[in-house]
Amino acid sequence: MAEKLIFEISQKGKKAYTMPCWDQNKAVDVDRKYLRTEKIGLAEVSEPEIVRHYVNMSTNNHHVDKGFYPLGSCTMKYNPKINEKLSSLDGFAEIHPYQPEETIQGVLKIYHDLAEMLCKISGFDKVSLQPVAGAHGEWTGLKVIRAYHESLGNPRKKIIIPDTAHGTNPASIVMAGYEVIELKSNSEGLVDIEELREKFDEDTAAFMITNPNTLGLFEKNVKKIAEIVHSKGGLLYMDGANFNALLGIVRPADLGFDVMHYNLHKTFSTPHGGGGPGSGPIGVVEKLGKFLPVPEVIEKNGKYYLDYDMPESIGKVHSFYGNFSIIVRAYIYMKVLGSDGLHKVSENAIINANYVKKMLEDTFDLPYKQNCMHEVVFSSENLAQYGIKTLDVAKRLLDFGIHAPTIYFPMLVHESMMIEPTETESKDTLDKFICVMKKIAEEARTNPELLKNAPTATPVRRLDEVLAAKNLDVRYEMK
Ligand SMILES: *Cc1c(COP(=O)(O)O)cnc(C)c1O
Image (cartoon, rainbow, N blue to C red):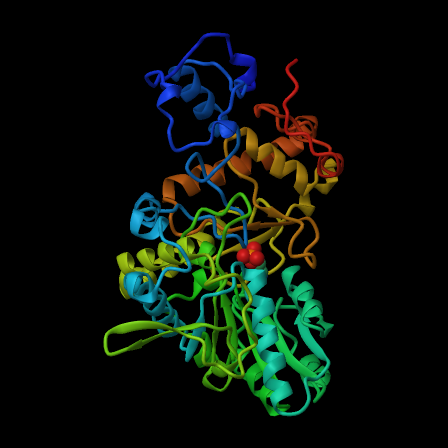
């Protein structure tokens, strides 16, 4: 049942909590002209009505606290509630960015120690916590790459990406002033080494790849890739959005990467379904450290300082020091789990994805058969004979209280469905999901009209997505 607007529930004279009447004559410090004389027109409702209104609304949409959320590439893991509670403690939430350094020593220690932990887990020499999204990290990393090449006398012109790249990669490359060159993947869904060797010349600034890539596959030739890139004086960038598959298993710097971004909101647990806020720190090898954004938090004799003395820095990329509250959550998450716990995160993420892969490989097309990392890409091409598309499968999942996987990405797989279970889901949840997916595939054969009209059990039925995007109307029409 659709929830009414709170103004539609409102009835004149209803109250929730009432404060004692305020005696206007006692106002001494306020100029009377600033006092409001008219009512502000809030809804008039009782306390249980308010509570039920918002609780009901919170369940109209899908979220990770309500059900399984296998949205590939996004790592929609369950976020421990204690992170939320601790990150909103007064000492974190009530501070001001212009406060003197000596009054925020604990805060600076968190910046300093989180950067250190991120270095340790990735093998990089330095980390900047300033970028506030993965895409922002990409752009910052590319600016660092440009600054490095400029310092050698030639910024170069091009950056190469594989055809599996996330859409933010080419966008960041263009915004950093480079030309995008696309590389076709080989039949295994990996980088074609020979094509890379042919295309990577002395005018190419960097090769930018995601590892594991967006097909959920580990680039097993990454060391050879690094050799090719470095032999031409280029740099190797790692999109670290899929870092959830590597924690405590392999360090990107050891594989030959020079720069990477982390998506703290994905890998290190922050709720991120609604588009933000996020955090996209970058890690770099030693020779790139001096180009990172200012300021850097440094420690001297047990005291923490903001260091602005970085003459070759690319400058600031965000106001103040990034999204602090996301940084606190990541810090708590890593501290609570420790190195063994983080290793288990990745191990379980990989096991869960391979379990789903194995259990559904006879139900949907599986274009790449090798073991996957933390996510698996299927195709519903086998249902096309019944007139069913991946979109129909995704919509039908909502009727079973499960969020749709990422669909139609990566683009080189026709009718793709990218499933990322994450480590926080139990075998029971995965079994239920597998069972639902098999049922939907069966429905495609026996009752395709049902799928084409799905969802049927959600507050809003299938929307015209183009119209919805162009003509946003968040007000639900009461029928
Ligand atoms: C999510 C993602 C990004 C972009 O990260 P944002 O934090 O959403 O800006 C880049 N690459 C890949 C592979 C991703 O999954």
